[in-house]
Every structure is written in C-alpha cells, then in structure tokens.
Length: 123
Image (tube, rainbow, N blue to C red):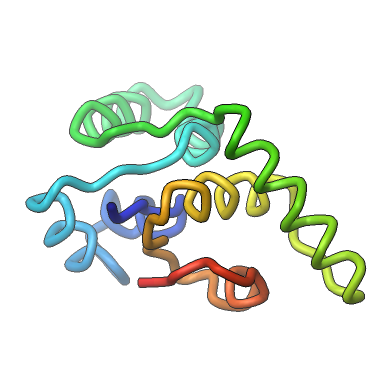
C-alpha cells in the first residue's frame, strides 16, 4: 500500500512537484490518512474551488482512519524519538504510526522529519 502525505497531494492538486508520482500511484490504488484529509480540508475551507478540489481528490483515494493499533504505534514512535533527543510533530507521528502499523510506504517530500522514524518506508 502506498500512502500519500499532504505535501504531495497539494503538489498533485497544483500540478507541480510530486504530481507525476501521485498520478502514477493513483492508477495503482493510492491511499492517504485521515490526518492528511484534515490538513487538506483545513487549507481549503473558505474557497469553494479548493473545497471542491479536495472533495474530488479524497473521493479518489482510500482514506485510512486512525485505529487503536495505529495510535499505539504513533505513541511508541514519538516516545522513542523523544528518548533519543529528536522529535516530530504530532500529525507526522500519527501519519507514521498509521503507515508503520500497516506496513505501508509513505509518499512524501518531508524527508527531514520522516527519515527519523525507524521502520517507516518512504517513497
């Protein structure tokens, strides 16, 4: 399973950056997380054009929910990183937890934060 992070989904909607990677993955069954759905909605509210674009994009994706196993994995990852003196944001920890618990590949440009996460495969 390939899971798209918010940044590459925004690229896709704007037709730049990682747009080709997202378009290619869409053909194979791309997913995203409920956290990324939230971030996309938060950035679109107030613009009917952007809201419609987000609605159409999310309809084409499987949106992965946060379940107890993913929440536990996210908490373990965040705690482990903190004990090693590094941190990532809560939203990124939740996304990483959802991917690691499912053995999914995360398609992202945010290598700075996500490369810190042990067991997370990036695409």
